[in-house]
Image (tube, rainbow, N blue to C red; front, side, top):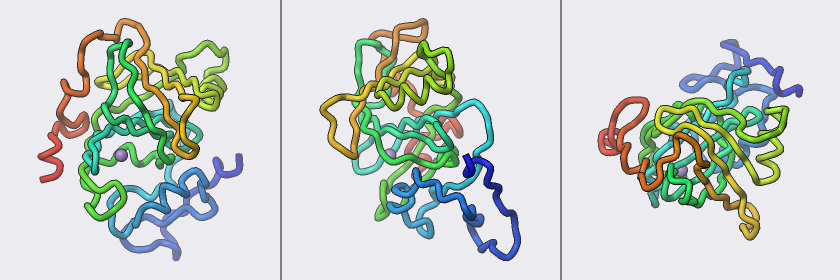
Length: 220
Ligand code: MN
């Protein structure tokens, strides 16, 4: 609980030039792997350590043209963005199950990131903000906060997206035979009024939800 109440020092002798000062005393162990993989003097991606304000939990989907094109689904939980790489992107057809490989937790500020990661850096390539919004619990636990936490831990994570492009009820279901360290899940649209059998939502939307740019325009 103590890390929740850590306040961020503004200015003062600790402030370095360029990027904002790191948050003293807030190590955020969930972000250790994220930070280890990146050189923040070379990439414009955020280092993390910012806001932990109470708000409706956020989600974001980033289209990422790294070595292999994929979509990164990120769902806020406990001050970080739980993250999955979805090679084929989301499908709004409930009969389609999309592989979602869990990757390291990302900082909440990553939700604002659209741009280019240098080619020789981790995840080098173009990143587009493909969808974003808030989400809420989609299961039956009377306590929604606990329901989300338990659902994630049990590998049966039910949530309702309120984005620009994706809405309604979804599930992430962890597969039993996954590799340690790289848990594999399935992303599945649940049947509701936002389900659209046969449609290909990833192909339908080729522009940034934030700036309207195409991948080519972001990289150029
Ligand atoms: Mn990615």
